Image (cartoon, rainbow, N blue to C red; front, side, top):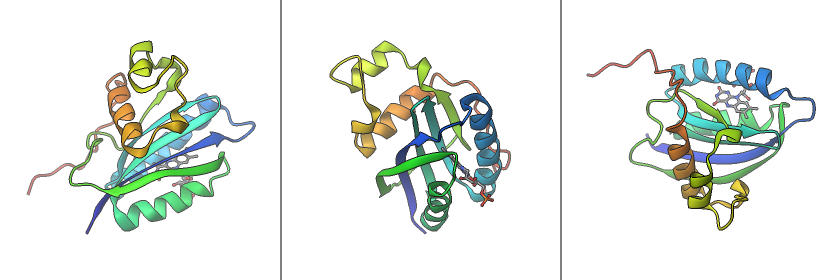
Amino acid sequence: MALVQLSYFSRPAEGVNLKQDVKSIVNTARRRNRENWVTGFLMFRHDLFTQVLEGQREVVSQLFQRICTDPRHEGVVLVGCETIRKRRFAEWSMGFLSLQEANRELILRYGESPHLDLRQLDHRSLVEFAAEFSAAAVDRALPELLEVR
Ligand SMILES: Cc1cc2nc3c(=O)[nH]c(=O)nc-3n(C[C@H](O)[C@H](O)[C@H](O)COP(=O)(O)O)c2cc1C
């Protein structure tokens, strides 16, 4: 079974309350992702959601289809999807962080000016950005069911 990594961006729907709605999205996401061995990271600000999802190919495909029809956002654009040998977000059932917290240095690393447009990044750059950005998030929500066989 192939392990894949998918990224997309979208716009929060009108009327979405970022604080409340993101909390409820992430609560559901963490529960379901733990059950399905999905990991990833969600970044958001008033005009943008961008998320990386990792997991088994069929599971990620189905999840992405569900996410695409979620009325809490619109204009979902797939950035990329590729098979991977190992996860970048193994410790996150779904990490999340407001993009307001992105620091200047990180933005300059990925953009040609201080006005980084995350929508212009390719899949791998977006994953790298999310991985570096996730280091700033403290609420790790470790999967509960880790076992070594
Ligand atoms: C930006 C965004 C990210 C989401 N991320 C996930 C996720 O990682 N995992 C997940 O199960 N649901 C996620 N959801 C929620 C799904 O769209 C869906 O509401 C949820 O999986 C429950 O599906 P169901 O009502 O068909 O059971 C996300 C929704 C949005 C708007």
